[in-house]
Image 1 (cartoon, rainbow, N blue to C red):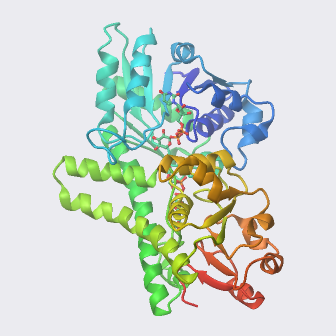
Image 2 (image 1 turned 60 degrees about the vertical axis):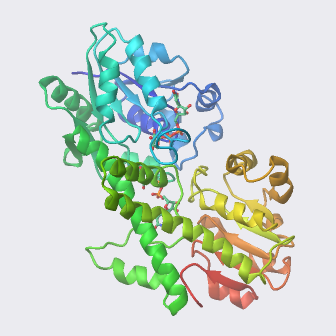
Length: 465
Ligand code: UDX
Ligand code: UDX
């Protein structure tokens, strides 16, 4: 089957960059990314490339190359569905906030709406690709909805989870470790799988394109995220032991990482993992395990989240106890709000929880992040509903200049590992702070010896010195 038109529903952090790279690498295919959010589509179409809704290193250049050549961003969902032979579903699948499975299960409301819209609009056979992360066996529900429309259109459902990490999305898409495609076993299913393989084969070596059955593909995505998050919680658990015993977590990470069976990636101790996926996907996995009565399996994975919550809590507790058991009325400066460097995404960022804890202790917080907007930061706090929005705005200020943010503060807390934090003039920062001046490095990126020489009192995650 020769695909000439692709539609992607959902122009978010996954749909936008993924389709941009497909369009760049497949100039013979027209790729239309649609979204119900008009302002998001307008931002993708913005002439000023610094206004794209997603910040990713290298993305603007690829958008510039492909946009309006064979890459289009539109709010006309019906038209794009109608034209396409292949439709990617890349809408968000947040954790349910109501009803059965509240706080755990994935909310598939948007996926179902998408399927119903595809069913209503389609006049010819189509391949529907699950790009969103979905609970295992969702494909059968989608197939059910699509096939019960009675208009004789046939649909093949594929699972093609996305493994890109934010901040390195373009590189991950251009050179993925693997592309995973799950599909059924009928002749039509096989043809659909091949059509998607052929698209990726335009730039991905064949041996890195893996095909499996649909359920393996759906479950592999949840498993990959669970394993990655587990590594972070494991090293974070060790960071607390290191602080008590005089070991240094970076040295431990290096020592174990040289064992080729363990490997040296994903061993950075931190104030806790964030991002839209890890927590959501593990909760989803826990829910699935519980649904099948696998309580020990559920408890095992839930511990990864409990450890992560503990890591955020103990970071803020440590700030309070170190500042003589009170931060009331004291200014504390946050360097970083994003959940990791090189992204403007703040979903589930550790900074949000740490700020909430410190605001409960009546601290005054000043935040500087190179990419996150003021509106986003206040929206993150308001979402928690811990206090009035006016109080958040009164006690937490957002600054555009790191030196201004640090002026007159008692302590600086590093919440995101942005490279620029390492190269600041720390003597200048020190000279304008209250004394004793404290630094709490939640990412272990600063040169603590240098800071100590300047006069700072330092805490670094996973180290007692
Ligand atoms: C994606 C995946 O879809 C999710 O399952 C995975 O776990 C993480 O990555 P992401 O791209 O990060 O989600 O989500 P988001 O940036 O919120 O983008 C989703 C987009 O879908 C939004 O722009 C939203 O407006 C759009 N949408 C949602 C629709 O166009 N139609 C809908 O019915 C619902
Ligand atoms: C993750 C997966 O890596 C990706 O494959 C999947 O498609 C989506 O979820 P992402 O959340 O974008 O990607 O970023 P990732 O680099 O995995 O980092 C997640 C969180 O873990 C961040 O808060 C990061 O700071 C933290 N982390 C990561 C650590 O604290 N230590 C580490 O060693 C690695």
